[in-house]
Image 1 (cartoon, helix red, strand yellow):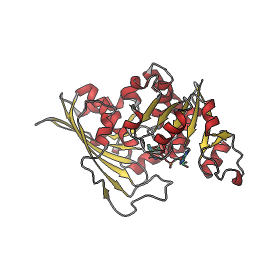
Image 2: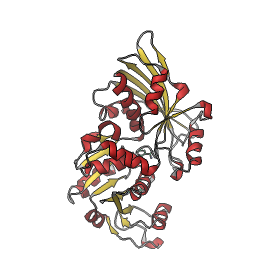
Image 3: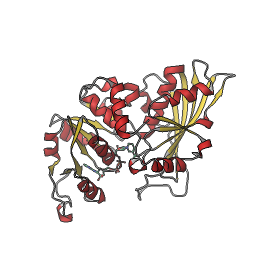
Length: 337
Ligand code: NAD
């Protein structure tokens, strides 16, 4: 059994904790709480051990008797999953994980250069095997890597341009926005392209991004120049046969991000999550006269697509060598196609 701890119990951390708890080869030792909130109460309800992330927090005054502090959690685990806000992970690496000789996985808010290895299971599982520190890339980069990897393996990619229309905030977030504007990322091209290249080495990609008043999902529009001819029918089959990608159809009234998330709730997914990247069948197109240009659109559930990646990454850093098997184990446990 791989003993796992979670440091940073927010949007990502609480989902990773629940996913770890249902793996047959993992044991959730506990989660940290930085400050008291309803998340702490839910962790307690679920029977998770709660460790203080920092001294002098407000757990005891709210009736929670912690099971220890971060240091004592680190003494008990094989791997710590760091899901703290961006840049805190880098500080934790130097301050806690290296001195305590604990393997750690990080999230996309950390820089590739600070961690050294970036990860998407179906693209580069082997790179993370037995490593000390690995970063699971951001929700957007995970979404791009999953579908582009499938396209690259079958047709070879000459060049990609992708635009990311990003949700303004997560559903439970009252601090970010916009609530009535479209906000371009004034960085051209955006940083997402190099981030994709940290996983899909050598793929030429340029990205642009903007934020909109929505909380549900990101939407990507993608244009790829391919080395080989492709047909729409083949690309549909390619995506249908690729793990963690779901082809959705207007014909099923899955026209928008709102309907996709309603579908996830109706399927009874925990929290109504949709960890698969959803590609619209009717929005796959080929322009074959000048170049073999593939066009498609996909939706990314930012809160959940990285969760199965975290589970596979834990196995990889612990030396589990069969990436395909790990993906199957994770998918089966989480009901992912
Ligand atoms: P979040 O704010 O929802 O959760 C972070 C949690 O960490 C909070 O519970 C906070 O109380 C706690 N925390 C703060 N400082 C801490 C500290 N010093 N030690 C321990 N805990 C501390 O953030 P999130 O959205 O879960 O993001 C976490 C990471 O995941 C970031 O790197 C982010 O970029 C990445 N990520 C987020 C999303 C998303 O859409 N939310 C998607 C993919 C990746």
